Length: 387
Image (cartoon, rainbow, N blue to C red; front, side, top):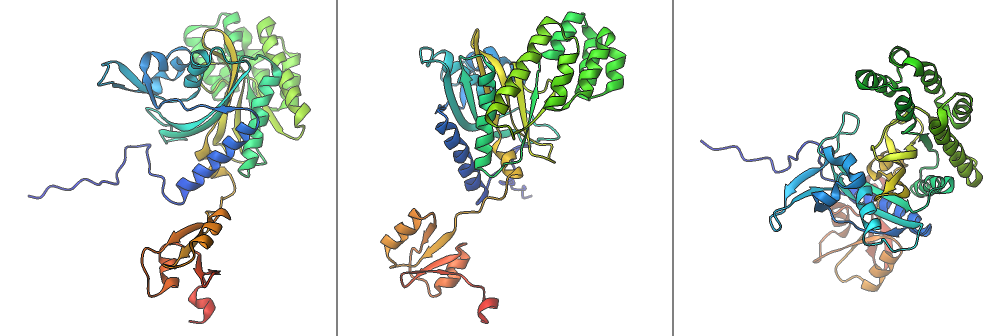
């Protein structure tokens, strides 16, 4: 009996091949983002894909421990982890290899991450990231800078109408701590807030219910939410968080008054290491997150903020990027002309031997032009030529 051969194209759930021209389109989009980061002084670093578990999951890395693949290093016999998020690695670099570099330290990165599981909304487990980290400065201007640089980077790939949703992930936990809400009631309240369930908030919020309900209903435009935050009693710590958010909004608007800003005072999505003003980026009319970031502690006590963009999601939301036009170069054609075409942005596909029908061969290999008699000739279908 013959055994069935394995399907070599079958990949694990959440993983996929990226084929032409999509792989090149993603690469060019990532470089467009990175060019903007570099223009604002963010210097690129390249952390390894794998690290020892002890360093990868230290500090802010503990927040992604459940999403981290682990394996044994055959050389050292120590456990290693495959990164699920790049920010903790950049934090490690900042506090070790670049500990003596001048602050504020501006770093950028691009690469792939792998997570143990996806979600129903985002099933992919291999995720492209491109981001920035601003380390060693705690100010509204720093909070504003990551938003403004991200907006410019997204504009570079054709996304000009985007929304930045600002949040305070520590606000509701702080209010619950001060109100003494713990255990099952705290879990139920957090679930109600996550679902934007006003009835659940009223049921489980106790003394906090009136304040949290006001905050829940205040979500929307920045002006509306900030007015509510000023009006409700948030206590000393909560009031300081709200004031910092207002200052960050003012700093953003001072440089880009037209940028669309929304605020969700009770949202606490994102990684657990975020502890100040945080942000999620959306394209209008779409629910997919294009990027996410916020303030955190780098190492033991150094203030930092950063933002990660997700190129896969960005390309789904952005205008379609045209593939590089391809030119068929027949055998014996001028190599100098082929080089000039490449300098102009064309991709040249050289014939490896003479062919009887250059136009047919050009079409077969996916070219839209042929270099013939020293001239660039576009391919024209037979229906247009009458052939």
